[in-house]
Length: 300
Image 1: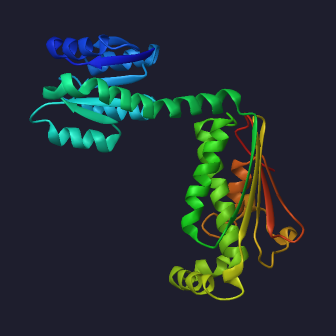
Image 2 (image 1 turned 60 degrees about the horizontal axis):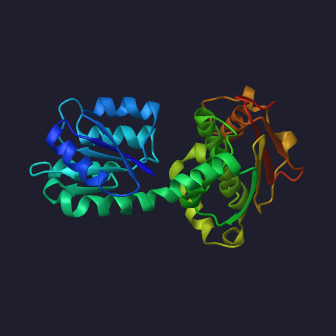
Image 3 (image 1 turned 90 degrees about the vertical axis):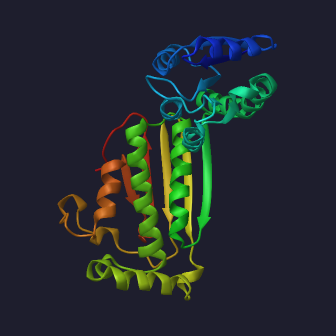
């Protein structure tokens, strides 16, 4: 049985939409006469789907869509539109609404639209439940070329994997992402492309030009960044290795004593601050970062 919340400050329109749904098998219909009441209900017991009017006095459908998308991303919202609300409806669709039905076509289209949206969203809800309740561990392995455009989606993927396992809260998820990005940037630019932070300190334009030159020149262009992530509900271990010449980790100054005005050492400082353990191999072309469940700082 799918629960549907119909939201409209006009009782006639609210009961019309709800009545159409109540005639169908498989729907349990509930009602709210304002966006504020809807948010209150969501806190207590989120429905499977929301159908809302666009134009309401306390908070319009656009703002409601934004609130639901932010706080309850697995609850889809269908808009009931009327003449004069087209611009707001388009904004709401861009903000995350799943679909819309003109009020003049409710009898013909509402039930079919609801079934279509529920079918599309049920897979995401079941997947979220599976990941949150049943996933015990996972392992990922990537081999990426020296293209910085690949870093952000890779970090986002690993953050999502960590979130599925409940390894850290939202704030730590962000800090984890920053640490991983710094490690990947170091591997790509300093490791594979052989660029030092001193070059970047001198001239960003020269640094960018060298990046583009080396990305297409041997031996740099054939080097790859290797990433292995082994995740459980207690610990995440991320191994990032480049194919560059490496460096002597023992020769690197303590990042906690570094000049914060300089680029040099910034990445290592962030990694050691945001992760629970950071270790380099003897060659200096591989770093292992560890994040443990419930820990909020900080590697030594």
